[in-house]
Image: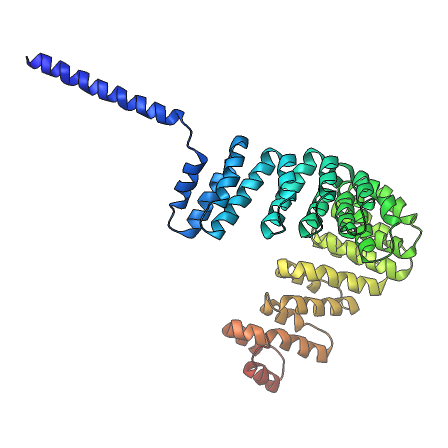
Length: 413
């Protein structure tokens, strides 16, 4: 009898387990409905959690669930819930079927939701079929959403075929945001294909946009193919465009081959163009190897340009390596270059290492400048590290009156 009871109990347990597994399998085989997912999301007490949960529902919808979700969005109680969920549903639709989603969004009343969804759907539509996206945008009612769509489609199209995008925008009626769309196309084009964009850019009307585009063409082209970038710049019909391009070529070229860039810049004329290009190239060189850039400036025959070049390099070098930069300045031979470099160093180093600035400032040859430069750094050094500053000052040959004045002063910064 006991054996039978044990067998009966075992059979009962197995039966119950089988039934539970069957119910679980049946539950798992039925996907949770959109309505159920929304209800679950809305059970979140905190509003941020609730809205994030609704967005999560929208982000994971299938194409077949989109119509039900759009209808469900309108039935949500709170405005913020409706706005957030509807936006997420429409954006998801744009991911799955951008042409169909754009068609729906284009007919919505103007609102922030429409604008936000257009920003998501228009580029996706354009990537799939730029011609169709452009035609659909052109049919939209006037408003901010249409303007956004035109610009976004133009920018996306430019990544594949900038000339075609330009032709489309130029063919739009004047009521469309043509200037803004062309602006976006040009700036995409010059970075993707500066050589291809160059001839179009140089024929644009003079102005800030053209100047910026010339700079971008020169910089991007010089980084890839400096010799042909130089030929293009030299052939530009307007001297202002030519000068702007040459300066930017020197600067961008210096990122790749700084010595070649400064040598190119040194051949330019007139003198002001040469100065701008050399200084631009030296600054880029300084970000890579300031010691080499400084050594090269010592060989320059143009004393004025040499002083400016050292100042530009130290301006970059000193904040990153005060000790090494100071050592270089200190090793210079007595003369105008050393005096100018000490002044540049003191100005650049005082907020990083005022002690180093003070010590080098005190080696200035001119008595008046020596006092002014030393004071400039010492007061800050004294505020930061009074013991070290006092010990140093005690061993100097400055007068007792000057010493007492400096010790009583407070830093200006």
